[in-house]
Length: 304
Ligand code: NAD
Image 1 (cartoon, rainbow, N blue to C red):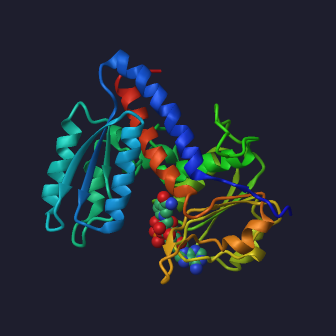
Image 2: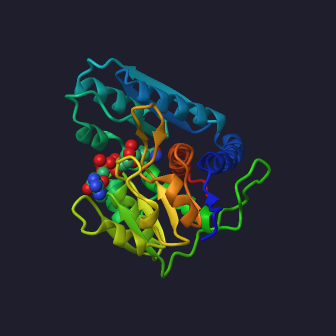
């Protein structure tokens, strides 16, 4: 295979999507009299969560959104977190609610996610939205899977990310007849991304920790999506020539370096397109959070 795969630059793609969202927000703000609002709940002082939340709020503001903060100490009770959610549920200026995970030990995230109004569920993790996804319906899809699908669309589009290239409409890639292998079956990433690929007529195989001969299965994939959490698990000889590889993993090595679940050095020369880590799926997850909030705003105001 060509030694120069297309690098699926999530930073570039998310910036393009955010600029489209910003233009829509400017247009709708005049009609509705307010910008979309994102309510952000951060409990505790986990440094990684603080960075994620700061990046999400920065991107939301860049797109012209209003942001509303609820910062709670790590000692908060589930009841106090619930009160912050209910305040945003009732606030007409809040269209999307982000409850940053993980929550401090001792607080069960499940019932709290379920207490978010499904139509304000910017992360797409509420059971109602998960059920709608299962049916191939609904508008709020989980962010990381949705962002991964947009990177697959980029892989098959003629557009190449560069400093000077801009994106018009990103057409949906035709995945009919394509074989998609997903490694990882989490509720957050693996299962929903498998459903999204299935919805697009791909033939999907879900692999996990109990799968036999994972390398051979991976070699059968036209598109390989990896969401495991093991640094550089997928090696070059696991990947078919010309495959598209989406690396969802984010792992910090003892040296401090961030790497994905894919060994980029050995895999990249074999594939036609691959996401970098960092700068691939991560920024797309943020862009999809903003997109979901815009969708919720548009639904609320019956905007086309
Ligand atoms: P998880 O721990 O919930 O799920 C991991 C999955 O991997 C499980 O289904 C398990 O069966 C499977 N698995 C474990 N060991 C395996 C092995 N040896 N072979 C095959 N499968 C194996 O993790 P998650 O929440 O899905 O996250 C996965 C990775 O993606 C993590 O590195 C996480 O940090 C990253 N992540 C990134 C983003 C982003 O925005 N880029 C978002 C969410 C998660």
